[in-house]
Image (cartoon, rainbow, N blue to C red; front, side):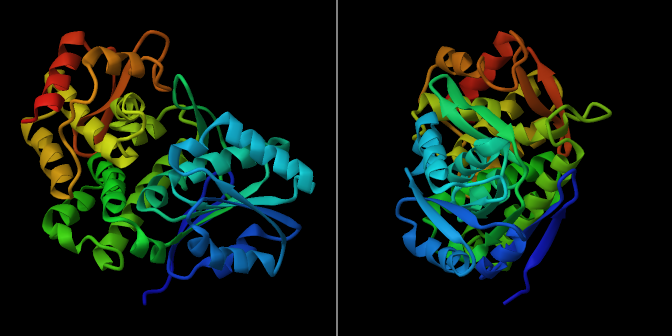
Length: 366
């Protein structure tokens, strides 16, 4: 078995992302001295997965285990408040910590609880899904949902460390693994063409837990996110026309709208794939992206089993959902688009005709 890979995040608050197998024993070293109490947050049904983490923690700390609802149901003000009350009852202080074990929703909620308890305590993420490993666990974004949209309440709170134990992927349902590839392929389009080459030359059946190619894809996608986050932690913008951290939202404006209008029945990675196809079509109509790269969006996402066509909501309903997207500025809608692979920019206030034309392709397919 290959040694663990350590990917350093050298920003304002440095930490490491570790990729490998059997990583729970690293937790005490990451949590550091002075921690007495640890809140372990995890969704229901993951008790067996959580056990090695729990065993590593109870030997060193007073552990408060907090079970959470599954998926996006965890990301609510009510669940966050329940966690705050539990921390208060157990006497958690500023020197104590939170550990999350689960998918992206658990990471988002747990990070938000850690960011807001006593204005910030240490948090370590142990993501158990491909999506969480390459997206939610890295970069310090936390958040909960409201009736108006996804992740509209949140904060930036970088973790003390991230442990991506690839062993967890062996029990991940295939559809969830495929959904996670949506964020991986996105990273290929915005920054790393080698990701696209690997996906396009590897038989889809070989993109499985334990394969060397999947590990390389995970590490490459994490590296893309690290590079972007270090350069622009708080999404204030990049240089020379680069969108900065906003580039990580490629496909997300439409993707989040699809999630919301579907009642979160569409998985995040599936929605991102659909959103990327949509903005590729939008960029083509705005005159910035060639037909070959647009076609590559349809083909590469479809190759790994992700959807490229969706008709679950009307154009007007999706436009209404996008108007409350975090990337909007006043009444101006904003989309991260590409001029070519690895050449992102922001397209502000595209025409309704172009938006509708891109939507029509999303509905009808190519």
